[in-house]
Each structure stands twice: as C-alpha cells, then as structure tokens.
Image (cartoon, rainbow, N blue to C red):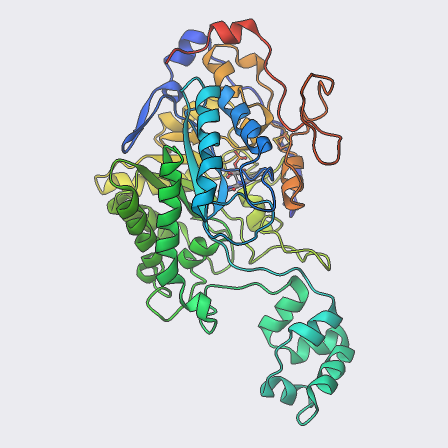
Length: 493
Ligand SMILES: Cc1cc2nc3c(=O)[nH]c(=O)nc-3n(C[C@H](O)[C@H](O)[C@H](O)COP(=O)(O)O)c2cc1C
Ligand code: SF4
C-alpha cells in the first residue's frame, strides 16, 4: 500500500475511559432511528469482506461464525460485506443474485439475532462491479487481447501486414515502443490488466447499465428483505460501478454522465427502484465517498450535494467513506489483478499507522461533517454514519457531540476487538484491545485470503472447536471474551 512519505508513526490510545454510568448515559450508547429502523446504540460495524464464502458465493459456516462473533459484542448495527447482486462467478464473494441464496442468508440473519440477544440490527451491502482482468504477460496481450485497429497499424508502420505478423512485430517493439504506438487505454491494459469503465459505452452491456441496474438492485433488496435483514446499504463507494457513475471522471454522454445532476441520476434511479420493491417500512441507505481523493475526482462540494439529493429522495441513512479507487492503484504483478486500496486514495480509505502529520485517525471527520451540515441546512435530518480510524470511546463521543455524524462506524477496531463497544458500555473499556492500524488484515484482503487480525489469530489455538484458516495457521474468529461480568452485565432486550 502507498504510504505518506513523512512516515510519522501513530499509536492508538484508549483515550478517556468512561465508567459504567458515564458510558450508559453517553450519546454513543443512546438509541437512534434510521427511518423505520431503531438502533439501540450508535455503534456500527461497517461492511468488511472477510473472504469466508465459497466459489458459489454462498453463506458458509465460516460466514456465519464470523458475523455471529461480531454480534456477540452487541453493536447497534452490523453491515454484511459487499455482496454481489448478479449471479455470476466472482470468486469467494458473497452473492445475492438469485433466490437460491435466500435460505443461506436467512440462516445468517438468525445467527446474528441469536448471538446478539436481539440487540444488533443487521444490514447487507449490495454491490455491482465491472470486469477487471489480471495484468497479462505481454505475449498473451499482443497475441490474444489487443484489438488491432487501422490507426494502431499505421502508427506502428505495420499497415498491410497480416494480423499474425503485426502482432509479432508489435510484441518485439518492447516497452518503449509499446508506449509510443499503443493508445493510452491499451497501454493501461497492458500495464495494469484491462478494466471496464462506465465510460465504455461502445460496449453494449456498459451502455445498458442504467437500464439494467435498477432492476438488479431492486431484486437483490427484495431477497435481503425475504432473508430477514433489517435493511440494505447500496454500495455507492470506492472503485465500483455506482461510485464510478458518481465520479467526476464519468463522462458518459447518454444523460448519465458529465454534470453532477446527470452523474447522480442512476444512483437515484437505483434507489427509487429499490424503495419501490421493498416499501417504505424498510431501511434503505447508501455508502458513498465523502471525497474520491483522486486527481480529477469528485469534490466535497459534489458529495455534499449528492448527500442532499439522497436525503431528499428519502434514504434512511447515509454512510461515508473516502478514496479506494482504481485510478491511482499500484501496478500489479503479472498474473495479479489491480487492487483499489494500494494508491494514495487507498491510503485515504484505510490509513495505517505510518502517516503524515494529519495521522490515520478520523481522516474523514471534516468531510463527513460537511455533508451532514449540508443536509441539516436543507431542514433534513437523515442520519449520517461516519467511519475512519475511530478506535476509542472518547473520539466516537466527540464526533457525535460535535454533530459530525449520528452513528459511528468502526471497521478495523471491531475486527481487532468485536467486544469493544460492549466492554465500553459495561465500564470495562480498559479491557479493549486496540487496533494498531498495521493493515495486516487489509493485506490478507488484497490477496483474497481469509481475513483475520494479527492481535488474536494465533491465540488460544488449542481451544476446542476452534476453526482454522486454509493455511492451517490462524484461527478464523476472535477468542471469546471470557468473563462472567460480561455476561451478567449484558444489556437486557
Ligand atoms: C478487510 C477489509 C474489508 C473491507 N471491505 C469493505 C466492503 O466490503 N465494503 C465497504 O464499503 N468497505 C469495506 N472496507 C472498508 C471499511 O468498511 C472502512 O471504511 C475502512 O476500513 C476504514 O474504517 P476503519 O478505519 O474503521 O477501519 C473494508 C475494510 C477492510 C479492512
Ligand atoms: S490486523 Fe488487526 S490490528 Fe492490524 S489493522 Fe487489522 S484489525 Fe487492526
């Protein structure tokens, strides 16, 4: 992952640890209404892909154990990882693209309900993404992938050659020659692997996205409802299709790109279709970028405006993230696919402890506060979930007190200690295991390996029934917080 050149080291701290009475009177542990859905507390576990599904995208026992473990810590809400709305092979990414997934997802919602004692509300993040290929061997690229055009042959002085001769001659040009003769897009595909973009309207399936996606999202949301989820989060963030429509880099000329009014059109149409499918009594919100953090990307003025449009349209909550784009991702090795969290924008999304003067904690606070402010100025009160580097009560409470957000998301801190909020609520905050922001977990995610945390994945491996990773070295869920006090003090329904 890219790191700021300053490389200043930051260490998390517990901050002010409230006693039980202080915690239970705190904003963080007060209820909030997300449209029709009441959260008991304002603690939120944002979507995190743990690579626990299988090649069929099904809910496995590992998926259930993973989320049940978060649920034992009784956060206000958990959002299940980005889940594909299409029924197409996507490696071990969870899917919801067909009715046959409903049964497995129902087992998941029941397990979370049970493990949290009914305290935690469960949402699922719905994602669409475009095709991306691995970085090819140059031989494969020139012999199989490259589309030979007259312009390319002319630039390379190969007009009149047979396709086989031209391909061989192009291959022999070597990197300097390739950069001169290939058009920028082909050069990019050779260096990074071909990647579809919403601007590729010459491809019929990309041109059709505005017609296709509202229905696909709506059906997926209906399945989520049938499976017992309390709500859905539309994934409009990071490197994926819907975020690409919102991006200032979207230059489609079909009414769905260019100005921000046109860029937000499909996200609003998707929302309208979902709302129509699930009805007004069901929680629907989205996750979107407060800042894209790429050159030529959307700005905070854009996202504040988007937030307002989403709120006006009737979304029940808005969750913010930042960065995480392909545009500035590092070049992958040959045979590897680009990963959107390796560049500067990736750092902004999941900043780690080696940072710049601003540091990795709370990098999205200001931008999130601006979005919430814009919504409030318009007389609306759609709750905003703020996430990014939050790891202690003091910081979470300060964000709420300052009106920066209404709910506080903690992704890696919840991974490091799924009981952190419960421990704090019980006045036992000193027992919280703090995330060190090393991004060991994110490194596993990048390799599509089962995600675990370095703080606990080698601990108590002899516990009966402990489930291990494919490599046999790591436990797959955090050890239980073995304290009688935790049980007896657990909040009542
Ligand atoms: C392993 C891992 C997987 C993630 N997967 C998703 C995802 O599926 N959807 C999403 O919106 N964000 C995803 N994220 C980003 C987190 O939700 C969160 O925005 C980010 O980690 C910053 O918050 P934090 O500092 O509290 O960890 C993932 C993060 C990690 C570490
Ligand atoms: S591996 Fe654990 S400690 Fe390291 S960043 Fe991830 S959650 Fe935090």
